[in-house]
Length: 116
Image (cartoon, rainbow, N blue to C red; front, side, top):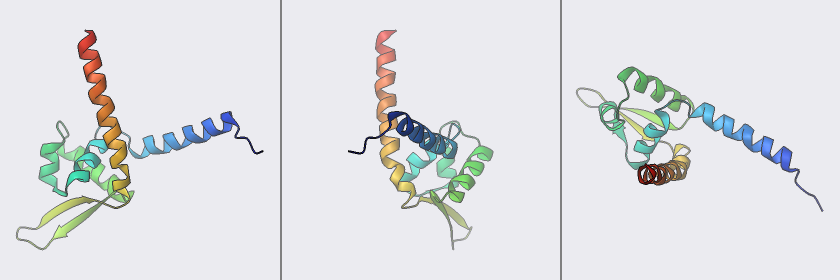
């Protein structure tokens, strides 16, 4: 019978968690992904919906998310030119994660509010 070494399994999972945290580092990337999981958006819509983000930070995070194949930037043939951002199929695999984080955050907010 082949048993799993709990220490090795723990280290393996921690390494994977670090990979995810490096990819989604910062305050805004998860919020950007969460928005784009619901619908594609223009830059100005993201700036409005991701409360508190600066234009410079949004631009930087969008580039990094695109580099990691989580979102795609589409330039539409309109006048003036419109740019839309959309979650990729690969990026949409993070939708469950954003839902779990949001649910945990709502529960935590209630817990803290009720214990104060």
